[in-house]
Image 1 (cartoon, chains in turn cyan, yellow):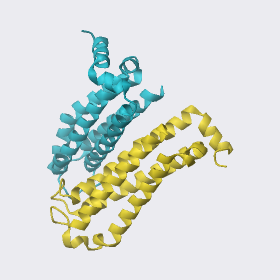
Image 2 (tube, each protein chain N blue to C red):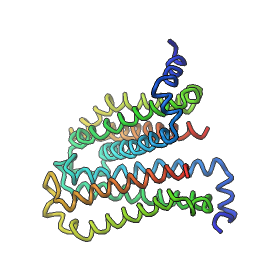
Image 3 (cartoon, rainbow over the protein chains, first blue to last red):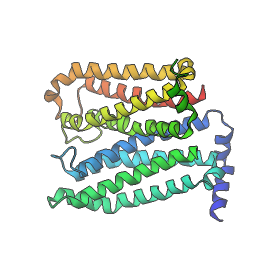
Image 4 (cartoon, each protein chain N blue to C red):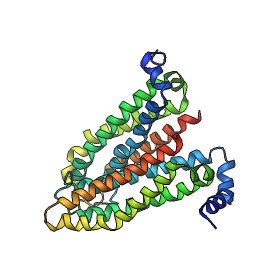
Length: 158
Length: 154
């Protein structure tokens, strides 16, 4: 089944029907999505500002990241689940939306980056070696996540 | 009066300007709520337990205040554009009320239990008054965000 088929299957699923017919369904799910966004953004900000050496300088970057990792992945999961529910309500519109495609691409990039090069940057930050890569990694991370947020806003507006 | 002013009208009728300001307002919740939530979760003993509460606060609060400034400025501009509709909107009024309560919660915290933070900041879980403040903060700010989203539905 092609990509379009998957989108249509989601729209026709029980979740899709529930979202499309419920008066408050979309609003409530969107609110959950927003709360997840705030917590995800907060965790990303704190980890990356530590990498930039702006905050919590006396603390280990790895320790901070390990703790915030739970909040980050937890809120990300909430956003993915609520995002799927939102998608089931307007699957067709999203399929053809360039903003949606950009959002998904940036999201994938942000997540992959987080689990790979970003991790290396955290080790680097704690090792006492020069901090150029941690700072670059932090900037890339912040830009990618910001891009996801902006693209998400653009879905509704374009 | 704000609604009919030149600037308010321009903002309301310029799709781009309004959308950009609204986007800034929405994304600023990460800077405002996302950061204060980390301080609240620290006091609840759920993360960064090895870091003292005042260290977390010192790092987080400037960010929270920045987020607050951006939210208020962008929020005021949005209000300026839609003042007539906002004024009577029950969700908007609820949002402002919750916002005021969140402010009072923070004020009480900083003038009482936080004054003696050095006595308890190394504990993994903070004293019950600090925890009560943290839970109240999380609930009130969530309420502000929820009420904000509900504005469009009234």
